[in-house]
Length: 269
Figure 1 (spheres, rainbow, N blue to C red):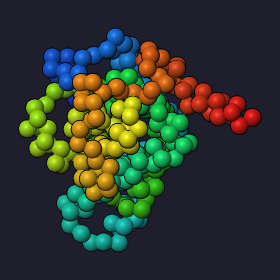
Figure 2 (tube, helix red, strand yellow):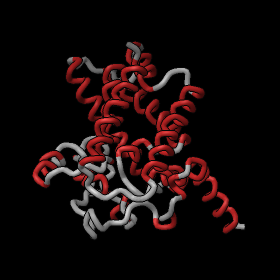
Figure 3 (cartoon, rainbow, N blue to C red):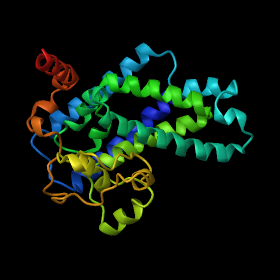
């Protein structure tokens, strides 16, 4: 089986399972635009995938295969056991994604694109797939650079990409975990209650809990918040200017960064 088929199968399976859990055991009540949101968020997945295939002849796993066989990158200089290289590669790639995520909030040009993800007025499993195609392109280029520097194996990158996809959906899922389960899980991985805080309209909370897979980075770099100020049931999700049905529209979501650019240019003019 091809890499793409395996990843698509895992994506569809996780999406289905978490979607069913959300339906019968939600953490928060769903709003009025659930169906339209799902259609838009999943449509963005299709647009993102199409753009990547059109722009790049090979993606992250292919680049890793080439770099690794040529002996490029950090791991090309080391003679470590394969299993150790595999584990360290996945951890370092996760750290790289954490750094990238922080950058998308701190660098204005990147925030123009990343705000499409945060404009969603609810957080559920599909929010983990909601990204502007230009952000996905920049993210892939960033991965290319990280892979070139590290030189991880194709298997390590494949495993990381699968884990990133799965945990992005899990950490955004609107599922209810008991306090005990959540406390134990978030010592290692990012849980839905932990990451939901990142989607708060309060800036202090949005500027926290950046991790997708491992929770250690937020604790290590001081960006961890344990609970939202208003509690999970009362906290407002999304971006304050867009508390309407607009983020549930596909064209609106695709055009949002360009609308912001026009406003900046008008203001400077």
